[in-house]
Length: 393
Ligand SMILES: Cc1ncc(COP(=O)(O)O)c(C=O)c1O
Image (tube, rainbow, N blue to C red; front, side, top):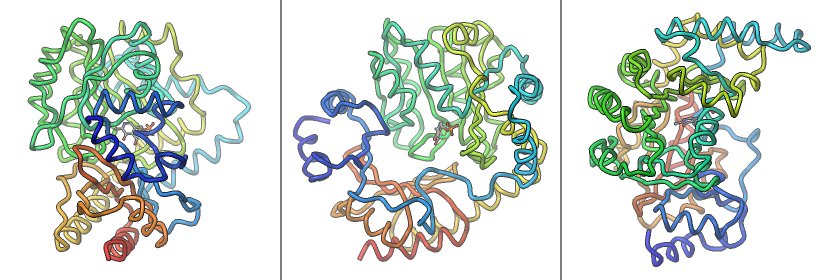
């Protein structure tokens, strides 16, 4: 983004950019607006819009802005959670150990290859803190999920962004060609957020297999279970092959446990030792959450039926949008993203959606305005379409 465009955006965000705390620039990049401006200018960053007043979340009729899953948690997981909250006076290392063994078995690795955390954001951030403590750059897509990059930026590292291809896949050749002597990590979100799109698994596997000999490759698989082919397309097999590949998964999406906070990372023992030396995994997880997660993992039928419902509601929403001449990117996740008309004022648009008690995200990247909507229940999506119609008039 050049200086002229930044000025244009500042104008476009209007008063918000100057005075509204609701303007979020790719989550919480930094406390200082000046530092943010510098970062935006340097990195052609994706920006999020926010109107002056967001309604109370509890007043929403369709909460579709954080890619949460309305079908979770599994009722049996809730029962376990409730029961084990009465044992909350105890630390939970013993059940965590059982959980790690279970995950290791599921992923075909050893327990030494697993690190857990309260959500995968925690693990993304830990990796960033450890790998970038002496600076360096991370190569990641434009646009992509920003948690890890925000930390890299905050501690003095930098982001080399590589635009997705025309098919909205990661441009793996370009990413490889961007590696330099300061590159410490390649970060790939597959499927990607905010585009919801997936990168071809064989191409990605070959890329990780060879490039990880030069630079560690981080694959964030937060939405993989919801994608076509699901976990078959995971890169996790490369860890047993000894490749310096780091995989994260979360219980926030297909398991519908975002508020209970649990995620895990699969990597080589050497890599995890380096991370554990500085910041301990596992300590931040609540025992009842682990019991709930085990229950959720044991109920494949529930997970499959949640996935089916999400896909069906997503298809319904795609058809409704297409019939109105909007063209969502092909989604492999529980959210959709589509371009808003050029004339849209995103702040007003969000305000109108909020008036209907529907929350979505509005973003700017590639000099275009976008709406990202999570997939809720069928009723949520009907409400979204009706609010969207009103907001476009
Ligand atoms: C790509 C991606 N990775 C990681 C996360 C973090 O999820 P959590 O910290 O809830 O596991 C998200 C959340 O939306 C995400 O979209």
